[in-house]
Each structure stands twice: as C-alpha cells, then as structure tokens.
Length: 67
Image 1 (cartoon, rainbow, N blue to C red):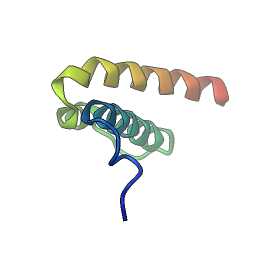
Image 2: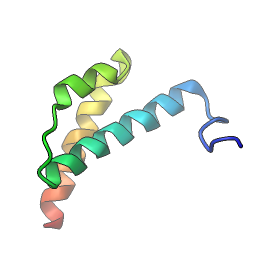
Image 3: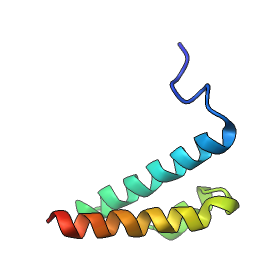
Image 4: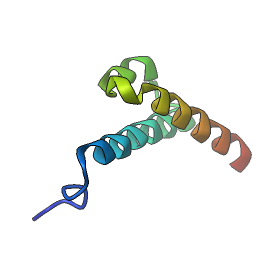
C-alpha cells in the first residue's frame, strides 16, 4: 500500500519530515519529557537546519500563546 508521501518530490518529503521532527520535539517539551533537540538536529539534512530552527521557534511561540 503506497504511503501518502511517496508521490512527493524528495525535497518536499524532507521538509515534511523536518517539520514533523520539530513537532515531536515541541510535544515532548510541552509534556515534560527530556528532549535533546541539538542531537535530533543531526538527523535533519544540512540544507534544512535553518528551516528546522524556524519551525521549533514557531511551535514554541504558538505553544506559549495557546496556554
């Protein structure tokens, strides 16, 4: 059974996976689980590390406003 992301270009799949990793880290932070986003960042392709940082900041800001 094909996955929904299979038909997307590689670059778009990498962006989505990077965004999901940022969400996972923020979720863990929100619920008090230990996270090491610095080590998770090593799993992000080099050209998307700035995007990863932007998404972390975006979700952290959104989290503060929703509480």
